[in-house]
Amino acid sequence: MPLLVLPNFHPAAIRLPQGLGKLGLMKWQFNSMPTHATGYSGRRTINRPGSGTPNWIQWPWDLRDWVAAEPLAGWVQAEIDCLDLEHPQLKANLRTHPDYRPEALLAMLTYAYLTAVYAAEDIIEQCYTDGTLRQICGGDPPPATVLRAFRRANRGLIRWCLEQVLKRILLQRFGLHQGQLPAEWRRCVAAAAASRLELVRYLDRFEYVF
Image (tube, rainbow, N blue to C red; front, side, top):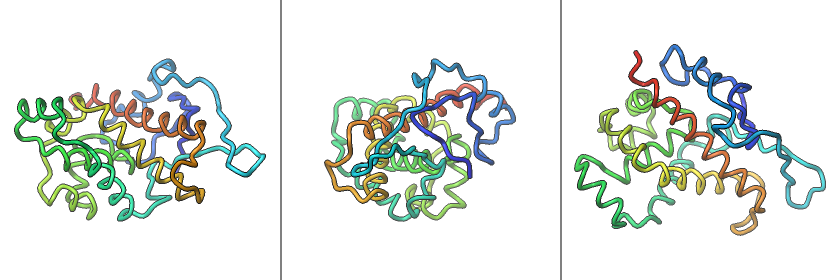
């Protein structure tokens, strides 16, 4: 499976993983994304703690290449459990969209983006074929329109969840403890989360084409 090297995220140079989205123009769309959209122009070396040699942090498109589905979903839920779902902005969104199930929607989108499923229709389809997503949505996936509306209204929240889970993944992969993640690595995590959401933002533009 192709690896996504971050934060040297250059859309014109990245191949989409096979099966990403159902849109026939996805590859054209991704290759046509402006370079300035990501804010990352050059390669960045990451030093592993205790090592004098630079290493690339290469994020797989599907993080299940590094972490099994069950613990990955568990980490997603653990981060969501830390959130204040009584936050005024979130409650205002719930009043506007009474069909929202914020915890389930946030968990669905975070897990889907970590496993390289981005299009709303693809996420819904995975809820029927992927046991973990089916469990997250309680066997009752929402309409694609609800997923789109929720992610557009809560990008910052989704990005935060992505970052927290990506940090956990690095801590486990490199045998670090909480608080030991260097600042440079934290910037790499932020870039990885932002890049996945950037792909979704561009995908949003074409979901109604076909």
